[in-house]
Image 1: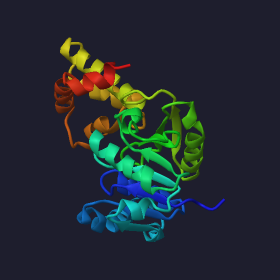
Image 2: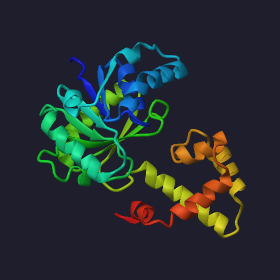
Image 3: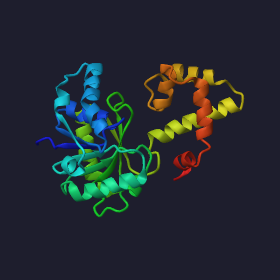
Image 4: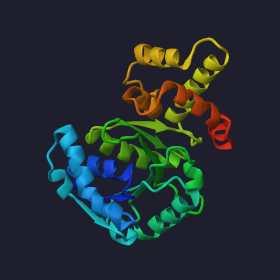
Length: 260
């Protein structure tokens, strides 16, 4: 079967890596972003990924850019939305996608925490709408959480999962649409326990960091972006613990962790 055209909505932190993955897999990719600066930087950013991974720079030639959603989604078989984490913005984008993308196109959001049900609330046909949570950076972390709202999403989810496996990703299905999905909830559970151990005087933050590195390993999916920043030296263990103590008290995090 002929490879579907891919549209990526958003050329930023996640969008450029997602575009690379599909282009490196042999797909033609159209990337839309309202910011011309982000589009201008896209070929260079994709080229940098090619150099980092030692892959053919020809992948960048399969990516085209534009500022029109109609242009990007018009002939697409799969659309991945990678816009900022703002519910109203995502809802507006999906309203446009429902109108402009072909009727059979799969429409997926790369949100890391927002429920897909809320993003798709105003849409008429929700069967083809999914979550597709690529982990950051998407060209290095293979996990993709495919989030279903109901059993009616299963055909679209299976199709997307097959394509993701073909381009070297590791998709998992999330059968219940809850805030934070699976991976982020596991990360937050680990962070809450780390904060509690330090607060109770069981150990200091440096010991937490040591246990995580030596016990779990740098490849553990539960550690995620924050622990990677500790290991790279861009954030200290103490700053990590202090920051998450503060963030964990915020309303948003309580919702992500506690809401069922």
